[in-house]
Length: 256
Image (cartoon, rainbow, N blue to C red):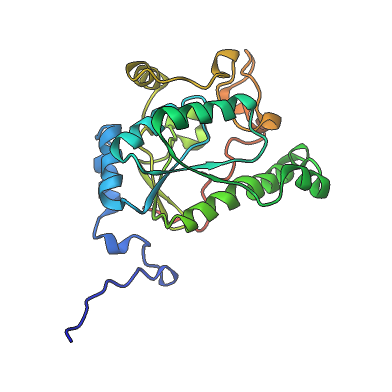
């Protein structure tokens, strides 16, 4: 019998890029994609990672943009929702509205421990400063998302982050990575005006709480309305932090 040629996966432990087998200069690709449209960035991700790519969504204020754009490119793309059990009732209604409208291939992941059980064991972690918030986020957001990526066999991940959203996102590139997963940010350079025009063009809705003054929408206990003396970043986690852990840089990130 003839020999079968196989491509050995990159050995990350030896310092190899987890994307070495792609045969792509990802730094150059990221720079090139800076001048591409959001739709072209999505198409690039689907072309290189179809069947190994997911889209994450918190179904926040402007979530319909990334969801609509992704399903236009691949209607079966897995859409990962991390449900903490503490989302607003309006958020759950919004999820169902968009699931039906866009025929989403929705994959819901949560902490196996129910919110009531967690409170009985740990108390209200979000009321215990940065450390408590960090523990809560690790349990209810980071672990379920990591499990989703593993179980869905994801090597790439679309995320709807935008530089304009916060100081912690200003330096993000079109391509990045998280724990060996390639992150693709199709709308990273979009402004609020770009988002508005896309939603209007495609007759897509904002989150229902947008009109009530919520600009960044997460859990009920750590989300506040935007008031005149606050920045958008201060409406989450009592102003103590902006990121929930899903998009924070860690020592295990591979720099592209």
